[in-house]
Image (cartoon, rainbow, N blue to C red; front, side, top):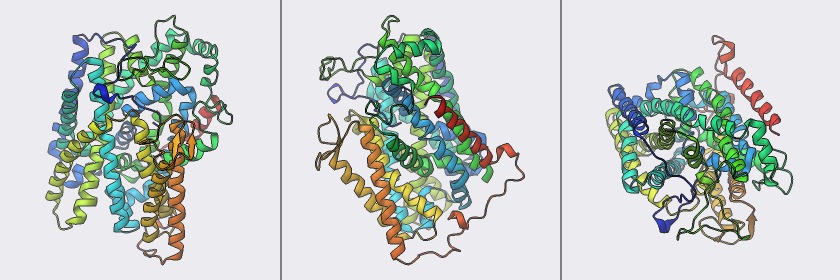
Length: 595
């Protein structure tokens, strides 16, 4: 998720360049598949409307969703357009090293969430992550996080809206503004009618659409290049491709395609950004909170980790194959070139054409897929964008209603909260549409998104880590830790810059005294700074100021004071610790195989 997602040219109205990409010739069968999918999406929302009788039903599905459904929704909420397109792009640019975003930057955190953190989330009956912060710390901490998280969800949803509308505009010549409005109305309709339940069941549908629509690409393309051995031969034939087959081998030297050393990957990605995202991002945690039991809630992220572990074969492999095909032009495929505002090919300092890695996935789809399968793949791309939009909108309406509106008006009835939740959904969609226009001005959306994650999730994770696993951390330390940690991240960003970038939104607007080889490494270190400063400030202030809550008040909120969930009645393989251990062993084996 931490790679450039799309290159946007403001002078061309935000449209993605399509130099070198064949336009798809859609037939009736392709349009029919897309129409049937959209009908199902809306149908689920209207079918669940009759069950939305209370605020709890709307925001948390009445905590009645089966564990396996929550698990698939948990992973589908993350399987958005940023991952599909971004990971294919990074597979073409960085090779198998991209698997770090899965096997280091996701799986361990998902297992940790299920085994250790879900008992506090689910057992506390908190309806949102900010509400947990109020119960553990105080109201100022909750409000600070509510505001920052609400902004993050709107921004993320707006980015997905823009990306989908921009892709449809560039590839199918549809009007950009019409695409933006129509896709927004579709998501609004099924979330407004069916609440979180509608979003979750549609995410499960979208999960299978993505798998069946995109997974065949890896199989067809791999067969075309002569299987795994043929792919390796093509990659090894080029100097840059030699390192594309390894995940760790080059992280200790100067020939590092990511520009991040092994310790930066382990701490910046594997610990701070990964745990910060998966354990504190309410758009993800909300899916587990909808489960019908504590055991199901704890299994939700672990069940989600199993397909997550295998996704590199679906989203990274096409990027690897695209690089191999570009190195060997015989098959007639090349990664599209990047264009400037005048439509000319962008050249680097060596006079070579700059490749537009963001177009790897759609260009591969159009190169290989016949009609029918083409319609299914385009529908899967639409599903990936809309699942990300819906996940963030449902998180926003919950945080807005319970953590901001109810704080200002605590005497509101359940009916009034339900109405405000629906109003917040409408407002969230409109605000996200506004941010979509803002996002269209940036030429590096994924870098901006990861910058926001570094500002919001990294300091929040330090706060949760101290709050959930120490009794001493208090409200004074938590609030000022978040304030100072977030400020430190902003200042560090203003002082640092990636090599080759001009000072501005990508950093360096205070000074350019710190340079990083890639924007990715810059984002990793910003997150490390945010986490470290927050952790130290929280810990020091909590030690020098009195405790604000007794052990009894912290019962169920701190791990050592939370009654341990007894799972003896569950099948042994379904126990979170056992299931999580199997997942961790499997991911260690995968890291070893592709070392």
